[in-house]
Structure formats: C-alpha cells, structure tokens
Length: 526
Image (cartoon, rainbow, N blue to C red):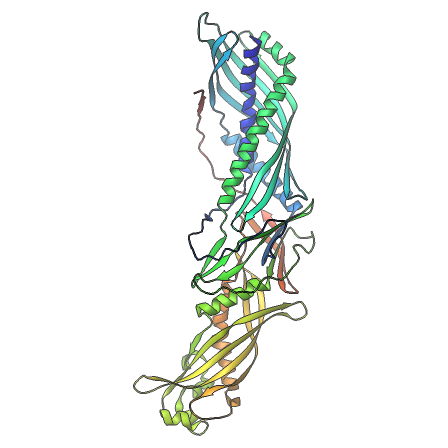
C-alpha cells in the first residue's frame, strides 16, 4: 500500500500550492478597470516594432526598483490579513487506482492557521524580466482524512493530520511588447523549496503513515514542489493576462479629442528601474493627425525619486493641434467680454474719423471680433527660458448692421507669445497660460487702408480676457497621468528639460482590499 499512501500525502500537501496561488493573485496590478478594446475604427494606433528597434516615445513612465519593493512591503500585511481571513481550502474527494485496487479518499474540514508571509522582494533584470522573491510562506494546517477501498475487502481508515510547512518561492516574469496595443507578461521560471516540512498523521494506522512520511520525505517534497511550480506559473500567468487586458490605451478628453497611449518602448536597467514609453498623441478621429515625431529624451534623471514621468514637446503640441482642430481656441469677442475702457472698439461711431469706411457701412452699429487660429499654436520647452507658446491667429472685425446682417470690415494677423506654467492636478498635469506679448499687422481691409497701432491695447485686452482664458480651458484638462489605485504622489517636482517636461515624485502606497465572502467549496474527481 506504499504507493497509495504517498499519493494520499501528496494530495494533502498540494493544499500549500493553492495558498501560494492565492498569494500571487493578490499581488496583481491594481486599479486598472477600463477595457482596452478599440471601438473606434479611426483610431490612429501606430505600428510598432519589437523592443530591439523601438520607436521614440512621447510619454515615459519610470518606476524605481526600490519603489517596487516598497509597494511589495506595503502589500504584505494586507495580503496576509486577506489570506488569513478569507483563505478557504476546499474539501478533497478523489478516486485513485492503486496496486491493491480502486480507493476513494477524502480530506475534509481543512483549517489553515498561523499564516505568515515574509516581505517579498522585486529585482529588475536587464533582459526585461522581473524576479519576485518570496523568502518564506509559513502555515499550520489541520484536516480530517478518510479512505475506503471500493471493492472487497473494503479496507478503510480515518483520522486527522497536522502540518507545519514553510516554503520559499522565486517567480521570474518577462515583459515584452507585441505591438502598439499589446504587451505580454509571461512567467519564465518558478523555483520553490521547503525550509520546514513537518507532517504528522493521527488516528487509525498513523504509526504506519508517519513511517512513510519519514522515509519518503525527500520524494514527497520533490513531487509537491513540481506541482507548486506548475500551478503557481499558471495562476500568475492568468492574473497577469487579466490585468493587462484591463489597461486602457485611449482616454477621451471631450470636445471630440482623444489621447492615444499606444505602446512604443520598454526599457529595464538591471536592479535600478523600469521604463514604459507610449505615444501620447492627441487627435480627433476622422481628422488629420499631428505629423511630427517625438524627440529623444531621458527615461530617468536619477534614483532619488520613486517615480518619474516625462512628457515630450510632441505630446503638448499634438494637444494644441487637436485643440485647434476642435475650435477650442476660437473666440467671439463682444463689448461685454472686456473692460469698459475699450467700449469704443465695439461701435462704428468711434471710427468716423479713424476709419471712415467703417462708419460709411453703418453708423452707430455694434462691432464684434472673431478670433480664429488657422495654424495650431506651438509650445517650446527650453531649460533656459522655461515653457513658451507661440500662436498665430486672426482677429476679424465684423459690423452688425441694423438688419442683423454681419459684414466683415477688416482683419488683423496676430502673433501671440504666452508663458506656460505646469501644475500637478489630482489625475493630470495641467497648464496655466499667461499673456506675454503680441504683434499685429493688417491682414486685409474692405474699408480702406489705415494704421493698426491704435488697436494694440484693445487687442491686448481681448487676448488677456478672452483668448488666454479659452486656452486655459484646454490647459486645465492637461495631460492625464497614468493612474494606480491607492497611490498618492508626494513632494512632486517639475523640471523643464530640452524638449520635454519632467515630473519626478515620491509616493505613498496604501493598498485596499475588497472583503470577500468566505464560502467553502469541494474538489471532486471526475
């Protein structure tokens, strides 16, 4: 009966494997809940090559190795509490063919106590691998067992079992970009080993079973480790695949504008940091897409901060391009929009001497100014001057006749410079635009020639009180940051580098878990 006894003990020990699988599921990526399926056939998801020939990203997200270990440290007590409160090992009911005949055995009322986890560590490899080391998972287990030979003679026995088991596990995961919309995370290795293995049977012929445990301990450990390796790999692969499927690569900003986070690069610096690069392209489906490409930028400025985010000029200028297409920066200015000092601008009577042609079209009629931008504004990032925006627009002076017909009188070409200040919002980096200066010249006139200089102060007021606030509507939405549930940035620092913006920050990670119902299930052989 030795063969059956070993099989029976293996079934009891495989319970440990189920605990390890539960642990690995609990440390999956948190807070990613939007499905990434592309429902818009016009989405400009760019082609991407493999990691050996990556495209330059517009957006880089870098996480230090010490940050990963801090998160693992924060997760450990939560996971231990969750497993202690909710871990449910199902009853086992199996039929086994043995040399002495067909035997049915059961393991019931499995109770796990004294569960403890040593803090895991994460090591970043140079070949795009992450190694998760769990130095020790300890548990005490109790259960009732029973077996009965199916055919005559109906040999049977029953009793209980106590086990104290400590096992260490190392899991290697390789992350790869497949294409612009998919990356994979696959377990490449699982290594488990026992540091404690004490199993004692009670009741029935326990003296015989304990003899088998003592003499076949090494064989039992090896067989259980093999099963742990297989099932942990399967559990982790399932959890990673499910987490990656929830990552959203697009974000709807309103006004028809979508930001595309197609994958572009994945870089690991061994034992230091990992960096993920995405496109960061703003666009309007069905309209021409911003055609420039990102310029190279660093993926880390040092390990003194836990997390780093880098935003290329390309990202910001694609946002300006899409905003221009959406007409967000266009404005209609009337007398009510700017200070009363400039009321004269909005009535034709004021132009009787300055521009007689306007007064000739309609005396004592209202004037409105339409601001339109035919060319998208351009942002420049330079550490010596900060962030500047250069915009070209046209101000069209329109006469509202008594019959409400609108007649274009003349238009001024405007070149506008704005200073830009980034700020950290709850879920994004926003930008505040401040008027710097502007130059004007006559674009066309249907009311004769004249000097435009006397309009300079009025135009400046229009820009300050109407155009800049319109730009700040876009700036307030800003650039959405990658989000992770339960993570709060601390001591964030902005920096303007050559051609890109850096956000470097520490963070506090306080993971939360949703309570689960404690339901007992049963494993039955088919």
